[in-house]
Image (cartoon, rainbow, N blue to C red; front, side):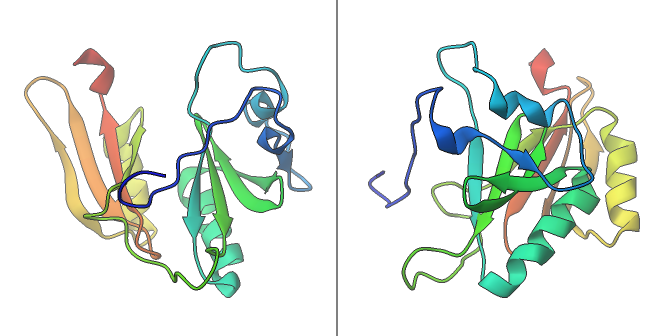
Length: 163
């Protein structure tokens, strides 16, 4: 636990709850990475989004629709697999409620996207309202930021690896 009360989980590669089962009708080779050894000493694996129970299927469907994720289960959690990120969706433990991420210790999720300008236009056409719209610096670094309907701030970047 961090001083601010954020929980960080560390797992060994052989941990059973790291596997991912795709929902019926989905067969994505990239999502199968969770069912093989990682092969490196440390890797980012998943993040939890806590919402009220009736919202779980809505969150799952939204991330599948907006990001082209693969729906499934990781352990007991509903999940959406995205390249490099497994998003676990569940009810918070105890009576903690949910809260937006902005301004908290873990402020936002950052994702590197190829073709960011086109991707932002697609999101906007699906109703996403940007907190900071697509912009590109002279150094070929592009960024955009929005907040999902449940309060998670998401920063999208393109060209971050060149910095």
